[in-house]
Image 1 (cartoon, rainbow over the protein chains, first blue to last red):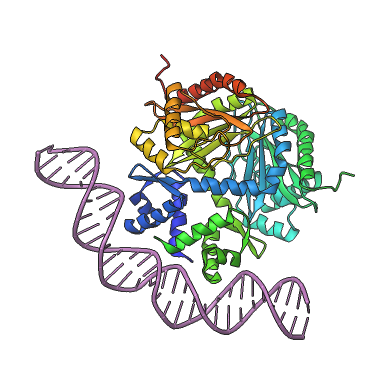
Image 2: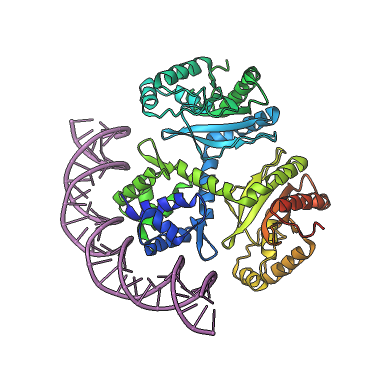
Amino acid sequence: MSQSLDRALTLLRALSEGSRTLDELAAVIEVHKSTVLRLLRTLEEHRFVQREGVRYYRLGTALFDLANRALEDLDVRRAAEPALSELNEETGHTVHLASYEGGEVVYIDKYDSTHPVRMYSRIGRRAPLHCTAVAKVLLSELPETRRREVATAMPYPRLTANTITSPEGYLAELDAVRGRGFAVDNSEHEDFIHCIAAPIRGQRGEVLAAVSLSVPKVFLDYDGLMALVPRLLRAAAAASAECGWTQGKD
Amino acid sequence: MSQSLDRALTLLRALSEGSRTLDELAAVIEVHKSTVLRLLRTLEEHRFVQREGVRYYRLGTALFDLANRALEDLDVRRAAEPALSELNEETGHTVHLASYEGGEVVYIDKYDSTHPVRMYSRIGRRAPLHCTAVAKVLLSELPETRRREVATAMPYPRLTANTITSPEGYLAELDAVRGRGFAVDNSEHEDFIHCIAAPIRGQRGEVLAAVSLSVPKVFLDYDGLMALVPRLLRAAAAASAECGWTQGKD
DNA sequence: AACCGTCGTTGCAAATCATGCAACAGAGGA
DNA sequence: TCCTCTGTTGCATGATTTGCAACGACGGTT
């Protein structure tokens, strides 16, 4: 709708992959370099980009500022922090906090494993819907019609031998998740990692976010992972309590 | 230079303070609300903003993604991580990593205190130049002329009884910092906290970033803080080694 | 040392693109 | 039910942005 803005945002995305020169960027959005130059200048004024030497441009500090300020404002994140941090320290494994935002599942917090072997993840990253425990938790409590819409519209790329690859299979899995109160990713995303996830609920019992524990299979086999479920549920309950959830406490 | 882009970026900044409605935003940039609507639509397409219900807009997930991807690409940050994390675990105090980017000192990483009393800070935030240990470290090794330019141009708001409030005082302090290899913020920023910081160096000995330890005065008095200097310098040296620094190792 | 090529930068003229207006729609409250 | 408040759309106007072409700075090569 707004051409110049559209172009500028595309530039930012390009820059997120690393520094670029002026006409590399011009090639990306297919316009004259003088046009890019002017866009970059406004972006620079607002500190969204930054010059690196004379030739290269990269993302600027305003982005860090904006993003982290917004993250901080997420109440769930603040409220869940103590419980998740404790879960991370006690188990030593990677803990993720994810939430459902505008049709996608996004990692909004992360506590790295204290073990030397770590998995790769990033705050702000979008989680695949069909093969992660957090996504299963978050989608499992959508209204049924919406759930079906999403499940049929989304892609099911096979990533490992265990990946669920059909809407029917996925919808059945969501029902199971809702029934037992936690979700499992049994190496459906990456061969060497499996995860469990549980919901964090708010005042009215609605699901605000999902906590997950991700464990390399070399550390714990499937049964070992299942043994962690009570600990995970305890953390999720503590976080939920902080968010005003009272149901089930009586 | 680019009006619509300029306006859109201003909108983002406004949204970083919380959700806004359409005409609240229109008031911010003083344009017709239809104009804002169209800008928001493009921002929404790129996931820079997100609708919350039908009335409110807030920042979207693309921002988190961009910012954290960019942060991750900072080599210093990755390289320093193990050393800083260890420093944080051993001392239990808040560790900050800051770097000098385009004329400002920005926090690029943070390890929270394990003590219940925590200080407030945020990744992406800009640090005041005249009263923080990290800024002193980073500015102390600028070329002399540049250093003087910066020191005379910057403001010196008095924040505590100890705040340095003149360019002369500050320049002298920078010389001292360079001489002894670490910087101190002796409650110059906030009354109840004092900090020490040291440089992380790269291949050619240039300062890439600064590590700091921030300690509430109720935990450690000035002498206690000074006793931590060797531990801080050890962490800084370890991080420097990871960044390719070899000088001084022989 | 002089040349050439590459890349960033600027002034200008043309028209595209963004803007404001005014009218419509839909939700919520009185 | 009516009224108000807020979001949404179509359209005409012209300000804004765009591409061009020429300039300048830098670096590498012969």
